[in-house]
Amino acid sequence: MSDEPVMLRPITGEDLSVLFPLAADLATWEERSPASPGTMSRAKFDEKQSASDLESSEGAVKFAIDVDGVVVGSVSLFDFDNLSRHAEVGIALVSDSRGRGIGTSAISQIVEFGFVRRNLRRIHLQAIESNAAAIRAYEKAGFIIEGHQREHAWVRGHYEDIVVMGILRSEWSDRKDSKVS
Image 1: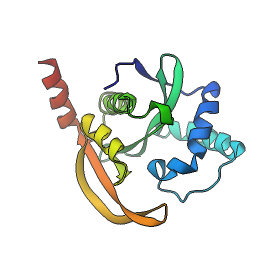
Image 2: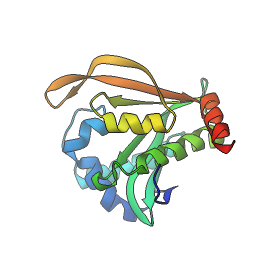
Image 3: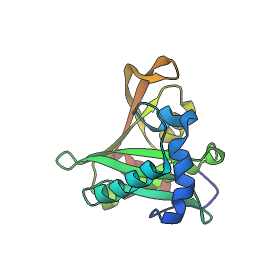
Image 4: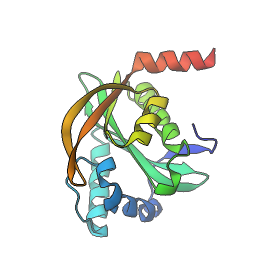
């Protein structure tokens, strides 16, 4: 985990100037989105952010990742299944914040939010297999590899597996309890 103070907070209008270039970055598109890569205008991004605000009332939740008062990315819970009590998590970090434990800390915090505040039973995510650093960060946060979707993603000219990972509330609780002891 990061030695730096990582805080999740609501996204403000001022954060959009950092989050837009991150969302529009074609170099890291496949690490952040299952959608086909494409250009994104600032107007389209702002419209999508407004739509995300509407989604929040229906369950999806998105936070800015703040390190010492500076936004360095976002993390969200989405695709809630209210009957089975699970949701998917996603994260995006600016490049100079990667590899410093910030993502692990942010993921750990949103997992706690999901289990404690949203009464989830399971949280899951997907990562492209070549994104080994992200997979390590998720494992540090307690996620377990549950399987692979073979050649499921088209990534920069070739097919890659999608790694499916998840964490159950009972596993998170056991990890939390063992850290306290």
